[in-house]
Image 1: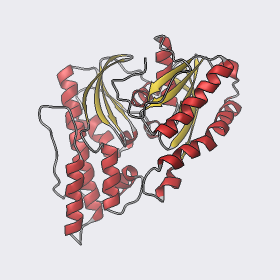
Image 2: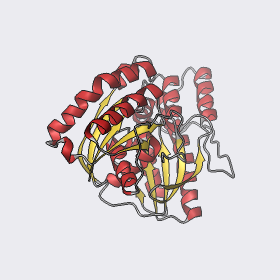
Image 3: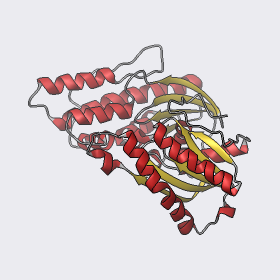
Image 4: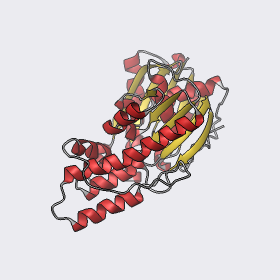
Length: 329
């Protein structure tokens, strides 16, 4: 079964074709990072307009390079939330138009659920039950996954998500945008010798990074000789320590078989190293190109939704604030 995936939740326009939920036939992402870098963050209206310009040429390129035709596509999976409403609308309306014109089944995918399925595009298939750590620009969630489509959100961010915290820290330290890669790169030249706070939020699986960001801001304002590289390394270590500790605690508590790492921040070198090193169970981490937003993960997730008979009609709408537990029916 070949599933066409479409992803336009933020500032990447992505199209992919995935066979049986596991094999990538074609995948390409058009990033808008260079466009938004001048503003220090994503401008929603600019993002949606760029999606409109990119989506049709990208679809045409997908079929040209994959040598497939519309008759080879058996289902369409599209991100319907969470994300920027204008951006999501471009992808959803494109998918609905194709579904109607070509009479191809359609399913809507929760973007966060899609990130989890980047792990199904690896050689070794994950084994349930699992703990999934989803870390991205807007989300830091610990999710217990007992089977396909069966989730329990154990904890989530109460304020700044990990990726958002990295963006703000990079801005404080004048390291550029996007912040995650900038902090990661700067940290390699520094040492984590600066004492920064950790918000453990005892008794919960939740995260909070706004206090850490504020501590870095005060440190920067009050220290004219601040070593930027040491500050980046110290900030990164503080974020990673909390993410790893809580994820491993959850894995032990619920006696899972594996831990999955997902989301854009999953590309962070220290997070990948520390989680793998400290985990009592095997850890599956997608390659960096599948951690950031892409359509292959959406197509993979869509395959399993089709297998479960979860189809969407032409009334499929976007939900900008869609939560992990609000999986489209």
